[in-house]
Length: 481
Image (cartoon, rainbow, N blue to C red):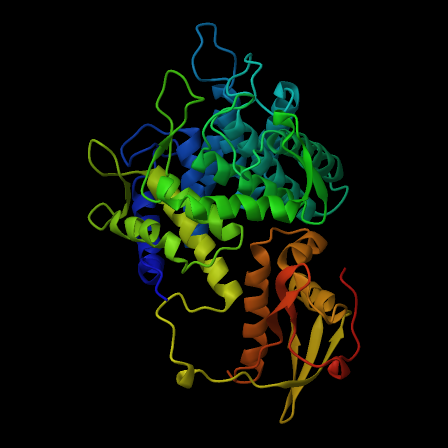
């Protein structure tokens, strides 16, 4: 299997990071193109790319400063109309502030985040949020964006710990509760408008053709809410609601995207909800990201054309991805953001499935992992003692990685990715990364030997992870903190 472009992705990501730093505006932001006026949307998108590229420091602080000052000003009421009071600007602005959680306790960042929560609480309507304040018509895209932003805020603030008073006076526990309530509100609206096909249409309340980009966004929003262990009422808009597990909602949307890949694999989809301005989604990348999040294999033949297009859209001269269009290709922040999101999702799935991301190695070249004999975990020091038939080592992990090991220690049959994510209060995409880090740490202690503590497994609820040792090899274990 070969994922077109993934082999070059790391280098291209680094080049993109340098390009973006060189073109950062004096106000700290970026616009659609490298020479455009700074905007909330595209500055947020750049922060996602910089996060993936491992770039931080003063450029990020400047960008966060731009967003902190721009969101409230941009969303103030305008007597002559305009785009100021659109839900998207609040959602993009808040999401951008959260790509670097280490800066969240800065007064201007947490203060703006709290303002965004106030705004979304004030302007929510039945079934979600509108495209523009004053229009009593739910927008699927804006509601999905709000759910994604609130879910990210919930996770970031929850990670700070309970009852911490932030510099703006906000209590973390109270903020988590408010964010969670908004997630529930938005998800109920999205699920109400979900169609029996498993997809979402391009408009609410009326029967329209399914929209690939909105189906992908709604899938990501449902997944981010982490309702994996709940049964949900779905499809009330057509008068025939059904009860489905959240995992099935995500899976059916992913299957719809794969079955109808020809509708989005090389296309940019316009947004018919938006009037008076062109608003487009890079469906070829967004569809890939969502299908992978739902559990698709990155090497699925139905994704090949989309991977090939993203590879071809790399503009080496500009140092950025370009986007297709009737007027010719141009390098844009938007294209870079969507492409990076798709490739990052692919890297997560590659790690989860144990694939290389390049042509599959011959089985004869693979070194079988060294079998384990016993594992003991000691919660007071977050230490693991791992032994094989030939040696034993002690490995110290971070608290979060240790908690993952303890959870699997207490569940010999394994746990699904979504269940692990729910128990650890993290995004499902984080679990494969944690597994990689644990296995890498164990291997280092064995001087690079192929020793793996955690392996993939199949549970009755779906694919997941378990400890790579027999039940009799399970020593003592602490409990997650």
